[in-house]
View 1: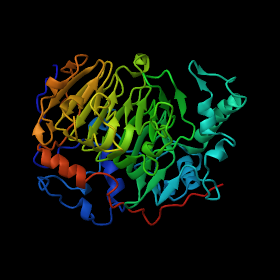
View 2 (view 1 turned 90 degrees about the vertical axis):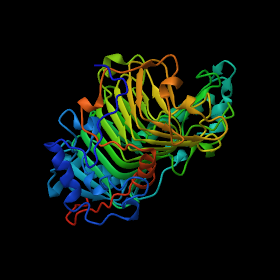
View 3 (view 1 turned 90 degrees about the horizontal axis):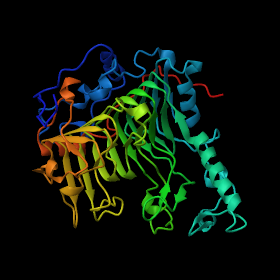
Amino acid sequence: MPHQATPHPTATGPAVRRRGRLAIATAVLTAGALAAPLGPAAQAAPDDLSAVHDLAQDAAPTGWATANGGTDGGAGAPASSTYVVSTRAELLAALDNGGQRTAPKVIYVDGVIDGNERADGTLMGEQDYAPGYDLEKYLSCFTETGWSDATHDYCGDQRRKRQTGSNNLKRQTEISVPSETTILGVGDDAEIRGATVMLHLAHDVVVRNLTVEAPRDFFSSWDPWDGEQGSWNARFDAVSSVTSTNIWLDHVTLTDGRFPDSTAPTGPNGKPVNFHDGLFDLKDGTDFVTMSNSRVEDHDKAMLIGSGDDNGDTDEGRLNVTFVRNVFDGVTQRSPRVRFGKAHVVNNYFTASVKDPVSPVRPGAGYFIGVGVESQVVSERNLFEYTGPGADASRLVWGAGGSFVDSGSWFAMQPVDLRATLPAEITWGVDWDPADVYDLEVLTSPAAVKAWGKHRTGAILPVQAPSDAVVPAVS
């Protein structure tokens, strides 16, 4: 039966959870990993959260990650495959898992790991990847008719250097995560920065309690014909999934961090060069994904679900994803932007200002939820706080095809009729109901959604590495 914005059943206490393999996921965080008491940020928050379960109980996924047999990552890994890492080299060795890459493994990240890190601990920069590359020289080779190697005698060399540098950067900073893996950040300062956490043909991956700073692309390409004013195209995502299944990101912070695009040099269109691509992109038939209790901050194109309108052969019937109890703070667009999949966007807190220089969301130039071709997006009890001159509900949902339904969402703490704001290209009503797929506890007031977003998201879990965790040998 088509879903026409009927509110889903809510619970006064924890929702009934699916059993089986998910019970093992709970064990990963209760048998030593969550040994410390919950800190102040994770204690009972104000504003209508007193009846909601605390973080210690939230140790297994909900949403689409519970389908297809469930998602428990490396739960059940032996002590020999339980690692604690603090360098890039150690992380790569732990992921290799003694040559048994797809066997269950649990990896605790302690401290900051930089994707640009050499084996000796020093960091690589632009000139290490492409000696002699110069952004100003690269830009000077564009004419009114596009790129020409003949514009200057150095143009061909700059073109080759940019491409070589981009490929070298990819080889260095892409961290390939195989199947049956759990990655847990230790404490509140665990971070992977300057790297792409890449899930390619992976199945059953859990990432929790970790900050991921998007990699800085030194070699963004300029396309003067992309859009009315031209566009920069950065290459690298913070977390990227290609043809992978059963993924759970929880209590993760995704951000541009130290290198927001607003600090980049100005390009030919008067706008900053893009340092970054996406923060969490799902492509090529990725399926059964949940992102929960996480923060997405200070970014332009946050999350792309499906990479093209012409990819129905790989994406149709897949790209099913749940976004539940996350914060999107200072994000310009794609929170998320969905093609083909069935997406459940529930209890998320969206906040941005038209006056915020880091968040350039403006009427006519930005949006929050994107509804694309053949997608079916169920929005439920989300809170939008979009402020500043010209800010209104017309930019909350944008789309070009696809279908959408909303139940009980709020704009500026008041009920909002998103149906009245939809572009004509979006159909109201979908033919699926999340309640037919999984159980979920839903917050039912804007105060609760806001309080959860402010106090219970990001890397705040009191995770500790077990005493017998192994520091992997680095060759």
